[in-house]
Length: 238
Image (cartoon, rainbow, N blue to C red; front, side, top):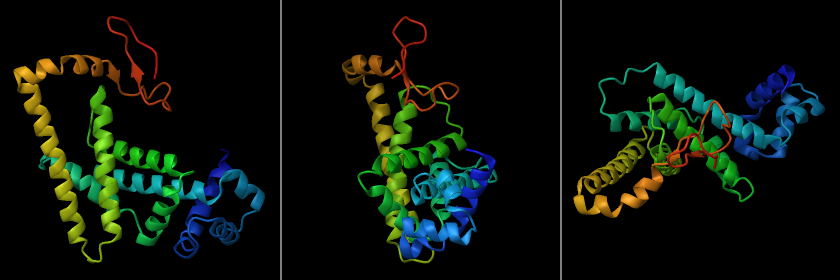
């Protein structure tokens, strides 16, 4: 993307936000944004080949960045780790912006042809949270942490959309319950590891999972991970 296309995309994102509550992330809203931004339609289409869908994804990523900046500016050092996670999710929801923008985006990315991208955006939100909290896992836990947090974030976001409390009290209580549920799972996993019988029973699956590693972000970042052959060096990517 050229600098002019990037600038045009930023201007269109700013312009489209007032139209989305009425027209959704639609071509109608996109055309209105192009007009309001004073752009040529040819440049607009070059910058956003999929129109409003590209801008909806940009909006989600921009809110991720706002959440990350807020986390970096906050002192969480005295918090328990589960509270750090809950705070990060809360920050992300607070940075989501107008509920109607989020509701329209949720509707868009629930459509079958856009659902894979919606899932990827949610995954990237969970990834951004774990990265901001200093996660250094490089095994199967890299995936399970993000999968679990994606579920927690998604369910809390949907609850928030229906929460009419100006202070969002019910939403934060819901979030705390979801985090507690996750902690119960972690406690169960710890008991399984400590059990001589169950640990032997799961030795095979654990051995297999031990060869799954997090993606190499300096390499093929679009691929989900890599497999390291037992006893070998490196390995084929999944």
